[in-house]
Image (cartoon, rainbow, N blue to C red; front, side, top):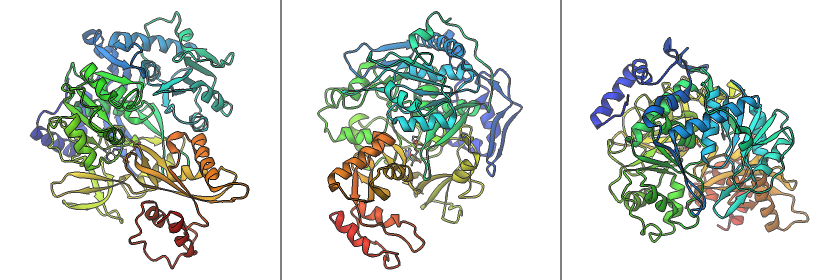
Length: 632
Ligand code: PRX
């Protein structure tokens, strides 16, 4: 049964119900799913712990809500349409029945390789249907998947494998990305030198390139599934059993493993998908994210498949082989809902209208944005030239930790307002607080964004470190989930997200902890100290600016800057490579030794107004040196 909201008054009504009687509200939605055993209690919660449980003691398997639910009515309907990186390669259309059989076969393969309920499995794969099969097969056998974006370096991969003590890694020989071919298996091999927990590696043959296979450990995907039955009885799990771990960056230390559990995540991923995008059966939906991010989890795989939708999966990049590729794909498959990131819009906008003109884009009904604030110029370009002025644009605000979209227009229902995520989904109670945690009620207020009541897909913990979860999200403001974002409620009551208020920067929609980048820079033997800040970047939203104190002996400034960028690329991955490295004689510090990042942010943004009083610094003279060094 669908719970799709149809009108604005319907939304207001549902929202009110969801706040007045949240348990009754979610219970009604959850009842439309298949549970092996119904729950005893809808919700138990305490944000102090934190301890949140939804659909307590309910038993289910999320994949039964995809396969067993749709097999008979949608067996021949495309579940996944796969468009390869190279448009000359044959595409693939995977029906619900085929996906079911592929998943079952892979479940049997996983089991015969020794993976069972509760085991952690790392997925480090390209955007191919087998990546979705890998996730679904883990879910079907009750194993916990942790997808790692295949652009991360071997040491980032090793950190994640070790943190969750994964037993198995699923990967490919290589990966096609635009004109490049990436040696994925070689990265895995390097990572595994540092990981003793991994027993088996299953390798998908994607590029056909030569790889080393370690005897007893590595097995080809096609060998692993050979002769395996296409039937598999899903393993029953508890509503609060872990479904997946997804690592994300924060303001301190290494990325943390955000934990999502089964029942609540399932209900919210499906409900939010159907409502935000107003998906209608038969539509073709396309989200351009990678499955390595939460957007790929909730809105390429789980949300659409739980809705019986046709989800398009694209292996490539927006500009290969030409800057009209996205639009070509939209026309080719008559895409109805298109969901992408502002950074992609800005990058394509820079190519002008010529690459858009050959395509009609007339199938589009809804266009969406996610990952970072969308600036008004990009909003209008997207709305006018891609949506042709008549597609609702849903600017969806959410996070890895929230599991699903929290604040967004419902397509065609909520009036559009450029650059405003707009209104909360039913069940979501966002509030804006001041620095002391006092709720700022009414309109025309600005402050930090918190959520005061649990929703089904809220993170439950950070893997292996519950204290961290408590400290990062539930301690800043007592009794509330703190998002780390600033927000404004305008005169109409619409929310506008202003960006991070902590030491997290958002580069091309990817979250990056400044401390994480600094730690990588500091690995370079010539680096003495560093400080990293974000600055406005025309395409990426924010760029990475690194101030570095170095021992210059035996190096030129230019060579050292390149070496530092390369160090970060190797340690974290290309997405973390600083855009600017400035070698400085010192960093501005307070008398207690704290780096004054505010000043560094100002210089990086080329804005020297309101630098504030620098005379109280331990070393006020470095500020002038830094300004001069930045060429200002
Ligand atoms: O700062 C917000 C920004 O992305 C952060 C979450 O990043 P991540 O966990 O990687 O998830 C990205 C995809 C859901 C948020 O704290 N962000 C995400 N969507 C928006 C946004 N900022 C403004 N507007 C958005 N629509």
